[in-house]
Amino acid sequence: THQWRGIIEEYRDRLPVTETTPVVTLREGGTPLVPAQVLSERTGCEVHLKVEGANPTGSFKDRGMTMAITRAKEEGAQAVICASTGNTSASAAAYAVRAGMVCAVLVPQGKIALGKMGQALVYGSKILQVDGNFDDCLNLARSLSENYPVALVNSVNPYRIEGQKTASFEIVDALGDAPDIHVLPVGNAGNITAYWKGYREYAADGMSSRSPRMWGFQASGSAPIVRGEVVKDPSTIATAIRIGNPASWQQALAARDESGGFIDEVTDREILRAYRLLASQEGVFVEPASAASVAGLLKAAEAGKVDPGQRIVCTVTGNGLKDPDWAVAGAPQPVTVPVDAVAAAERLGLA
Ligand code: F0G
Image 1 (cartoon, rainbow, N blue to C red):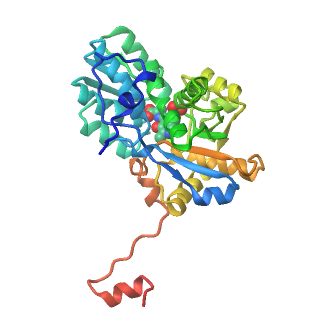
Image 2: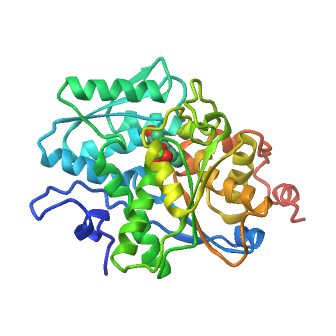
Image 3: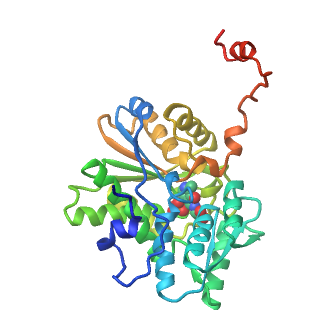
């Protein structure tokens, strides 16, 4: 039987590798494209979820990281560095282990989810909590990589984008063509850049008949692209996308404009509503930032911007276990029962 080999082996001819490139992989990619029944009913469309939380470290970052660390290894790097809101650092730390490299991580102090901190720690990376936000961390990481022998693996590294574009290939391969609309959360804007690149490349090579309109959603408190200006002190409960000055800002605008799409914002309340809907109605548990794509789709549908009958893919970028606090918060406490079937049945409403 065939096991998925990871994105580099599966899409080797579309990626910057040669026969001698030392591939560093955890067999990322090949993630589920799940039909979303409730979202389809609500929008009158055919909605699918690209469940990126199914990647080895629980987020889409693994697609980019297998490429970035593979090329860093090929170029002889012994150490890598990244700034992160948590997922990039978890991924970089894991792939650095596979490559036998040192991994340094810069995170905004107190603003990354517990699961992600746990990952960076258990994979053995060198973590610095920076007294600043993600944008400060990225500036610091860039400066360290320019002045010291350490390779930068943020999405400003072009190999990251190359790896991440493979999600578009998988979607077209699964559906037989590109969807009408593709919806994504937007933080540093690397992923929307990567998906657009993937869709364009596949269309140019005749693998699909068209490219989708790209719809991106930022959190209202961290929406520099929507506002058209840097947000100095970004805020949102979706810590993964708490970013005030996205590195791929211009590329995100290009994806939006070339595809005839748009970039809008969703409030934390809308994000949490979509977060709960995904888990309780679709059976897909994602982290809050990931729910921004679905929150955006619902917002657009309620505003009458979604024509029925279209095929829509929403990427849900990270696993819900990364940030379980939001699953527990506001939920009723489970009741305790004695070891007694009658009492348990009563509590469950069975008796
Ligand atoms: N969703 C999740 C779960 C993320 O972790 C990120 C980015 C995004 C969406 C946005 O993707 O930045 O390419 O627009 N996380 C980065 C990190 C910033 O450090 O893990 P983007």
